[in-house]
Every structure is written in C-alpha cells, then in structure tokens.
Length: 297
Ligand code: ATP
Image 1: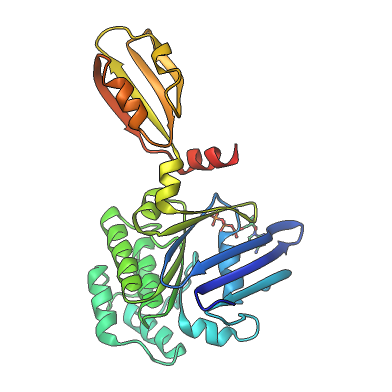
Image 2 (image 1 turned 135 degrees about the vertical axis):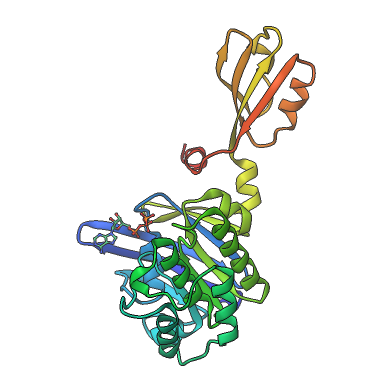
C-alpha cells in the first residue's frame, strides 16, 4: 500500500447469489483528491463503498482504506471516514440535533459542535425539527452533516446531492471542495455529470462491476462528444464538413440546418464555420450516457 493512496482496491469481487455485482474491480484514490465514481444503475458503486467500510464482505480481492484492511479493523476505518449512505435510516423519534448527537457519540464524540452548527445553518437545516417530519431532501442534509461533522480524513459519499434543490446541491459541492482544501480526500458516487465536472479531479467509470475508465475530469470532458446544431442563412452543402477532424454529420435540414457530432476540440469546426453564412449555433453538452457510449464503442 502506497502512502499516496487513500483507497486501494485490487480484484474486488462480490456476488449476491447469481448476480455478480463486482467482477474484479481495481481502484486507486489518491490522498487529497476528489474522485467521482460514475456509473449507470446497478453498476456496483454502492457495493464497492459497502465493501470498503466492511458493511458487506467481498468474495475475493483486497481493499485498503487509509492503509487499513477494512475486514481486519472496520472500527478504525469507520472512525476516520465520513460516510453518507445511499439509503439513510434514522431513529424517527429523535430531533435532528438528537440524531446528530447520537451519531457523534458513536464516533467517540469528536465533532466540534460549532462546526455542526455552521453546517446545519449553511444547509438551512432546522436542528429542532423531528426526524419523522423531515422531507427527503432534509433527511439527506442530516446525512451530509453527520458525514462531515467530525472532519474526517476521507469522505465516502453515495450520491450526495440526490434529492436536493439546485441551491443546496451547490452548497454541498462547496462543502466537499472545502473539506478537500482542508486536507480531506473525497470519494463520491454520482449519476450527475455536471457536478462531477465541477468538483472532481479525477473520475472513474464503473460498468457491470469493473472499472472501465479512469481519467482526469478535464480530459474526460475534452475527449467526449458534443452535439452542435448550426442554422444557415442560405443553403450549405454538408460536404463542407467532410475532413474536419472529429466532426460527423448526424442530420441535415435542406441545407439550412445541420446537426453535427464533434469529438474532442471544437477549434477545427469553428474555423470551418467562420467562412459559412451561420445564423446561429447551439452546442449541447454530452449526457453521461453519450460519454459512456463514446467509451464503450
Ligand atoms: P445505483 O446507481 O442504482 O445505486 P449501483 O452502481 O450503486 O447502482 P449496486 O447497488 O452496487 O449498484 O448494485 C450492483 C448490482 O448488485 C445490481 O445488479 C444490484 O441489483 C445487485 N444488488 C445490490 N445489492 C443487492 C442485494 N442486497 N441483494 C441482491 N442483489 C443486490
């Protein structure tokens, strides 16, 4: 195990009966990076996180979290990790503050309560509210506060922004970035490409229980496909786009409009368009699905 790595996974395998959720997963998360773990439903993201915390046992392979084997010392791992599970369960009879104090006591009471107050205020969470009356989004906020409140070295967040409104999603991403700036490592799963782009240094793509790609986030976006719609003042032959690097014609509208697929940099296309009677230009960011397809094909 290298000291440079916060998480190191080799050949991790996990089956649920006949379902092979992890089929030999390799994964490295460096210390003090924000690593986005992306993948379609059922790819194995939650299973990976659960194995790392020894909440379930893999059938094979090895894992190290902050240098510790989670099966050998799960208590040490959990004490140093802030974990936001995908499915949160709380004691319904408690208030938010009661639930947070209870969770803090389980971790040896290490949270600084001033920090907890700051977190709840920033997320607009009423600490006096009863858990049983909380909306889904407010429950998610309690989960985020409990994951962050003891300033853990490593955050493992299973879809942290799910169920939150856009303002709160931004606030959570800011909290994640601040935790990293203070020296934490962040490992989070997501379906949401824009948020991964915004905060993650690197992204790993998991599919059918295998890590199929790891890339610097910027490189991933740069290599991905974009869709560009162009409208012309007068008809243009689509042949003008043949030979432009990375550009393919998807469809055309009697010469007055064309939909293009662009792989990689936009520069060559923009240079070609400069000499054409362009009325408007719309660029669509690739969806996560398009990026997946770009990788898998
Ligand atoms: P999502 O994005 O939908 O949360 P995920 O990437 O987190 O998906 P996992 O929850 O790890 O995926 O599931 C991986 C595979 O294992 C899926 O096929 C899922 O149906 C299956 N699976 C997960 N947990 C169990 C379980 N307790 N029993 C049986 N099968 C399970």
